[in-house]
Image (cartoon, rainbow, N blue to C red):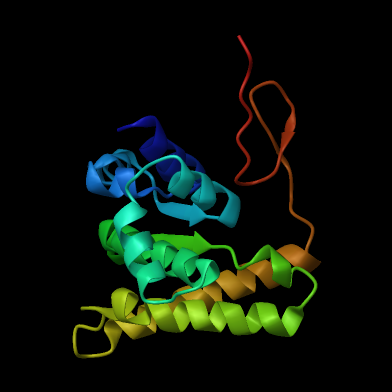
Length: 190
C-alpha cells in the first residue's frame, strides 16, 4: 500500500493532484499517480496558464483554434476542456470504485466572476454540460443502480456538509494528547 492509499484507507482523506498538464496525460504520469492513490485533480486558471506557457504541448491545438477565429478566452477553455476530458477518463476507475465520491476533476471558473453569483452558477452549469458526455459514458448499467448510488452519495455529502455546519465535531486526541478533529492528520517534524 502506498502512502497515498494509506492516507485514504486509514484516515479517509482523498489526495488530489493540483496540477493538470497535458504532459502528464500524454506520458502516463497521471495514470501512474492515480495508480499510486491520487483520487482527483484540480485545475485553476493560474496553474493551467503556466502549463500552457511552459510547454509546446498546446501549441498545435491553440493555433488551430486561433486560425478559425476563436478568442484567446475561448481557446483557453477549449484547451482546458480537452485536458479535463482526458483526465476524467484516467480517473474513471476511481469514480466507479468509490461509489461516485472521488474520481473528479475540479475546475475553477473564471476569477472575473468572483463577485457575480449568477455568473458563477451559469459558468459552472456550462462546464458541467460541456463535460457531461465524458462523465456519463458507460455510467448506467441499464438498471439505474449507478444513478441511485450517485444520488445517495450526493445526499450523504450534502448531509455531511449540513451537519458540519451546525453540529460540533467531537475531538479525539492523538498519541501525544493533542486534540484532533476527525479527518485531520498531524505530522511531526523530525
